[in-house]
Amino acid sequence: MKTDGEVLEDFAPEWDPPSPGALIQTELDATGRTQADLADRMSISKKHLNQVIKGASLTPEFALAVERALGLNSRLLLKLEAEWRAFRLAEDARTDLAQHVGWLRNFRAEELIRRRIVAPGDDPPTRVEKLLRFFGVSDPAAYERISLKLQASFKRSSAYTIDEHATALWIQLAVRQANSIAMSAPEHDPVRLRRVAKQLPALTSQDPAQAFIELQADLLTAGVILVYIEEVPDTRVSGVSLWLQADRPMIAVTGRYKFADSLWFAIAHEIAHVLHHLKRTTFLEITADEMEERLHHGDSSDPHEIQANSYASELLMAGLSEDELSSVATKEELIELAESVGVGPGVLAGQYAHLTNDYAKFGKLRVKANLSALGVTAA
Image 1 (cartoon, one colour):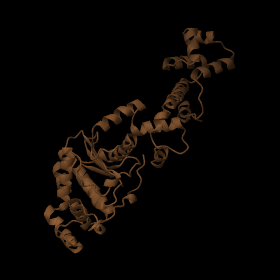
Image 2 (cartoon, rainbow, N blue to C red):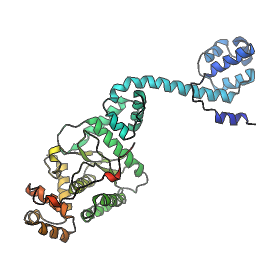
Image 3 (cartoon, rainbow, N blue to C red):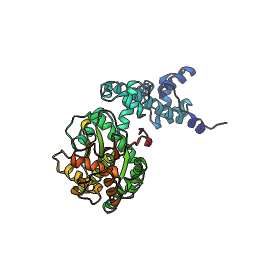
Image 4 (spheres, one colour):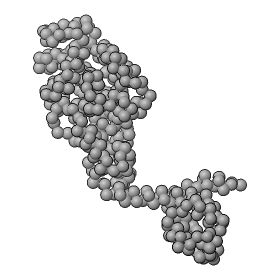
């Protein structure tokens, strides 16, 4: 036979639980006793007892008095009190959430479902609740404060209009994935990061997806977290660098890249921001459609972006001068030059296109980047 304690452990109703006061009144009705009689036996006022029966909070002392005077288990009453209050709180919260359904419309429902942030069968209040939990905020007003604060710190590589809510969604996906790694990551080591960055040119000769995984591991040894997050529609985001609360730098990139050299350039660009620029600034790189193959172009007047572009170009050129590269005449010469400095030919082909504005000459040497095998990031 179970003890009272064992019964309580199993007590977790999935229905709308009755209040402790309703249970007390039911017991009074069953035994033919009055509230006045029970109040006398509990040494409390009839008004106090009546308030609890109608839904006022029940204290441990009150529950113990009920157990002595009426025989109802005090632990059961307290368990029921907690369940009933939680249920009422959830019901009240759903009423409040229904007021925020308009905010939910800022986000594409199909994208929230695809990222497994919400489920297809969720009603609007449930979706609002899940989205608030995803962003780690209590209400849309808090989301606006956090999001606008982050948006205000963006350093963008272009001035094109973007969907700020889609961008916030993509960044939060990146942050959540990075945070799952950050606490076990070593402290950020700028000296180590510089050494790892110098290894990037050699990785560009490998399959892009495999090289990306290897670079992730290498950067982690320097306390830098690199993640791939598939692009959210309407963001035009190519990459971002920011500092997590764990005081670890994060670099996130999307699958927006058509060519691997653009991917490597973007990562090198973000490494420059981590090495040289303010910790609490978020550097968000956004490319317009017509600039998809020209991510290298530094048409921003922002000195941070100019410096990051210069760093990335110098790193991927692997010691070559601009004159040496721009004077290459044939595909064979370009391949030979790439082998001599230990960098992928596609990277030099991309750099050549940037320098000369001739994307056709060595275009076939530029390797396609397909990171889809790394998967769609879920919430």
